[in-house]
Length: 127
Image 1 (cartoon, one colour):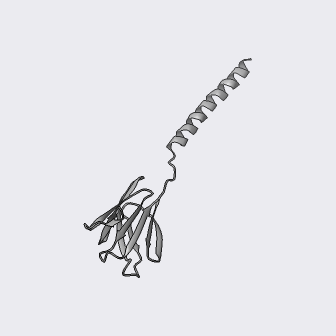
Image 2: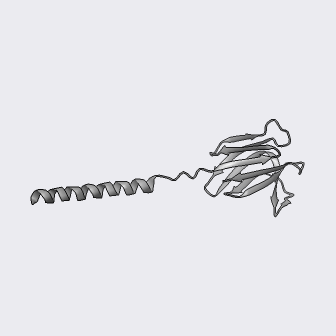
Image 3: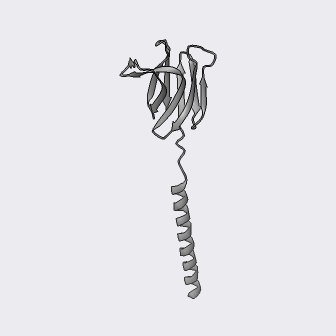
């Protein structure tokens, strides 16, 4: 009878330890929520993995769509970019008259930018 109790006690302790280890690893292991940056302009389309400090050169062979971006901040719900060229963003489908080098894009949202000629349309999505 003592032998059976020792075996049950061992199984109970080993099961508890295994359960705690399993719970800790399932809670600590991060989910892969990697998002990408998608850029479209005329017939140029590309997607990029983004990390802070990354330089993105888009459509370098097309002077109208040429865009160079530096990734400044990457979060789950937004991304902050710095453009080397002056761009105009849109507010309620109207071109904002105040241009900027800083670009903020919310997660799963489309940001429409215009180059200085206000005709070249660049769409950027972070999803």
